[in-house]
Length: 236
Image 1 (cartoon, helix red, strand yellow):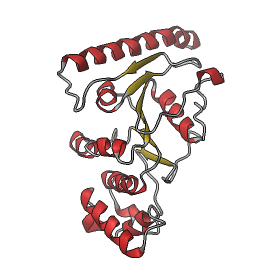
Image 2 (tube, rainbow, N blue to C red):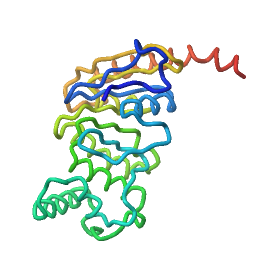
Image 3 (tube, rainbow, N blue to C red):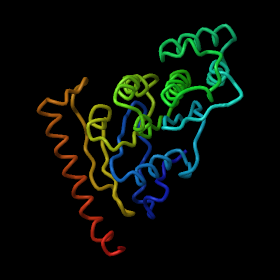
Image 4 (cartoon, rainbow, N blue to C red):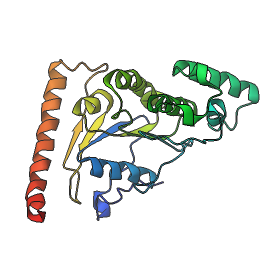
């Protein structure tokens, strides 16, 4: 599947290539632009979701599940080639890891937003997609829940060496996770700014290198915002 930025660029010269296996790319910019760009990698419209497959996995704020199946039955779809014995063990293990072991027989409709995201993370840990798309899944959660779930992101980004694209409004999250950070234009055209993140992991926010890259990205975002401002004023 080719990577085309739907509704972002009218020219194929400006389309973003799919990241290489094991590469993590972060997209910064206006929310609607980065959301459209992220879905472009999966060939999705803005109103569509996707059930993760071995090819594509999506972690977003509203993950989809089969409402009539319980948690274990939902996760079983991630393991079509496993034997019943293998499937039972893998599902039990991953539910413990994400803190849902006590709700195995519950249906998704009875879960809180945080628990639904834990189930989505469990499914992705089982699926191990080749292309993983992450669209600010924790933005609506409180700080404690967000911090707890964000701890799974490094594992999701490295397990099985998927190509990863993260759409985020946080410069800090982009620098913590990504090998390359792109600042997207608000109007159709080429990427406004690209930064290769060579900082060694784990990345400390107070380090000199982290502070310097954060300053550079914020400067690029401000510049892109100024480019769009005259057009916004004209429209008003």
